[in-house]
Amino acid sequence: MSRAVFLDRDGVINKAFVRDGKPYAPATFAEFEILPGVADALRQLDEADFLLIVVTNQPDVARGLQRREVVEAMHQRLRDELPLDDIKVCYEVETPASACYKPNPGMLLEAARERDIDLARSYMVGDRWRDVGAGKRAGCFTIFIDRGYAEPLTETPDATCADLPHSAAFILRHVQQ
Image 1 (cartoon, rainbow, N blue to C red):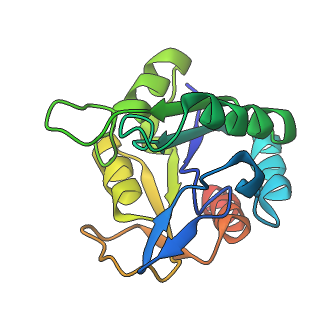
Image 2: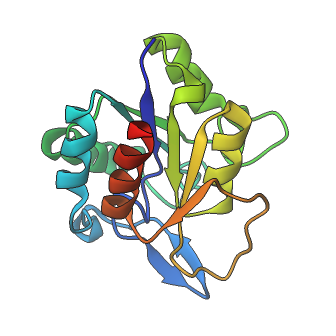
């Protein structure tokens, strides 16, 4: 079985826009900015034989605040510039019926079925409580990137790091133990 690093998108791979202490996705393709050190961090994880899978909630499409083709253009840029194996997107808004909307683990579980991933040997890296929750529910080791948002964690992550480069270094040390 394979092992993976599941990655939230906004605030982990690309810049999030913080308003009133809450992070938001970039509104336009022009605002879409890959964070410093992300490409190198992902290359290191890729070289260590991790599958790299983005799992992202994009509810603004369902809300009519964002066009799906803009989100897809952002994802094409990620595919072109980063060594990603897949990008899973939940375009729904949060409802009790949604299996994919984090903190529900649907995107992680789907990727695990498709790619024969051992979730217990995998990691979920995110900057919000929803990411930690999805990782915990899927059985992954969770890494919280603390961006200082004005929202509490609902579960304790397994580790806390400053950004994706620090998270990658942590993962590479952790698998050596």
